[in-house]
Image (cartoon, rainbow, N blue to C red; front, side, top):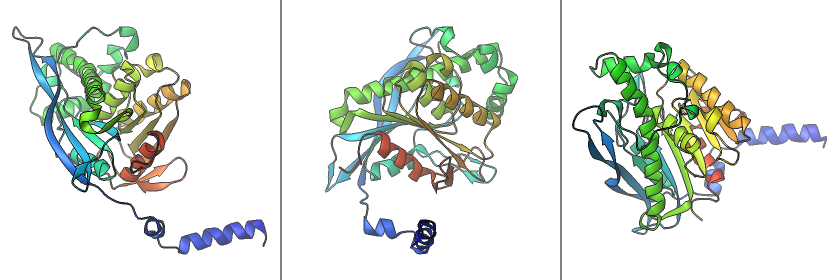
Length: 335
């Protein structure tokens, strides 16, 4: 048969196969999930602008895969941060709804990943209204200029969130709190990563196979943690993240981990442009990146929404992330 005809014949046959044929040929086991809530991973300062600054506990929830009643050991791990404009959000079941669409919670993602064999950690981190402080000053050369990050255009979404929360518009004091909130979130995620690595045996984690991820502000935090602070991990994925706080053009170094970026078709303009800048910053240092669109959605979308990849692939958001994790964390999670 002519090779060209053979190719068309093979493609036609593939289209006639049931979508689930591959899954039926190679069934995938889903693990049970064991949840441990509110594990303290550190302490950090808040109320730092007052005359009574204090430290508060930083918490995380642990989702462990379980087989035959026993938590699995030596598993790859995912550490996730929620979204909420660095002002609101929750590490558990909280979901946001906007323009008729609702996102998936961090608990939704972590349960999904744990069922596939990953240990997933959903972290709490300090938010702007808590008036967070930094453990140490950050070199301004490593940061996006304040004039850019705190410009009216950059903070328009923040003002909307503050209005919805019943908070007054940003002023000189709260702008500084917001700025510190972006950087403090990355400090907290870096601390959580160190905690997980330091307690790897307790949580059944392989410390050399850890990925960071998050949504919106949490996605920005994952980028800042891995590529701004330089916390060593194996992979990073972002759900509608962007560039804020750390200037990745200054901080990204060759050899840093690969990243997967997802953004919605009708996402916030700052998220879309920030994602493009982040991809460019990583690519300029030879860091492997993958990108995908979520068609038909704005900033909020569920993990089951279809995503379209630059390789012409079409797959749900959750499935794309799992494929990325499986490829970058070393081997299949069930091995």
